[in-house]
Amino acid sequence: MPGGAKRIWESMHRKNPDQVLKRAMPSFFIFTSSFYSMKFNTHIGRLLHMNKMTYLFIPSRQVKKLGGKLPIRLWCSVNGSEAFQCGLVALGKGDAYITITKKRMKEYGVTEGDEVQIELKPDESKYGMEVPEELEELLKQDHEGRRRFEMLSPGKQRYIINYVSTVKNSVLRMNRALLLIGNLKLSREGKENFRQMLGLE
Image (cartoon, rainbow, N blue to C red; front, side, top):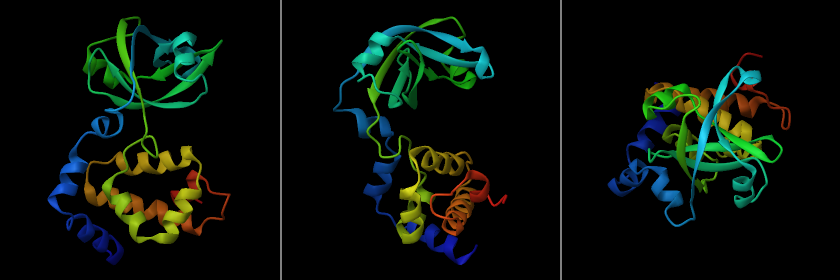
């Protein structure tokens, strides 16, 4: 294991039990327990021009209650299921939508055209999604990497977080974090792009 990765690994495993327990708690309880929520019925639709993407329809009257300015980061629960982090995206004429994957639809036992009850709560997390522990530890130790990461747009920050998160193995997550942040530091400020961060340019 490379020296940098080894230091991150050791730091992750020196945490006290309280820190480990806090991280194990679902972010839903950490960020939304004291905020308002809204429940209403809606339906599952499909956007044919977006590669047949399935979505939860959010009517304009509900968008206005959420502040009316898009995009908005939220927690969404479908038919009482465990909440997931999502973004509210403009659909047109004041309406909006939340993407729902086929995998989630299968888990919830719903399909296109179904009417469902959803509950929305504001997402108060810094990046709109949970940061994997390996990336968090790297950014604590690499001050220049954190500085460059904080300069990125929210969309690019979430890209890095998501790319690191999508593998189950901790060593692979660590390697991905080191790759992306290492290449980010080599890029020109303000000219960062995904291909360069992946080492493809």
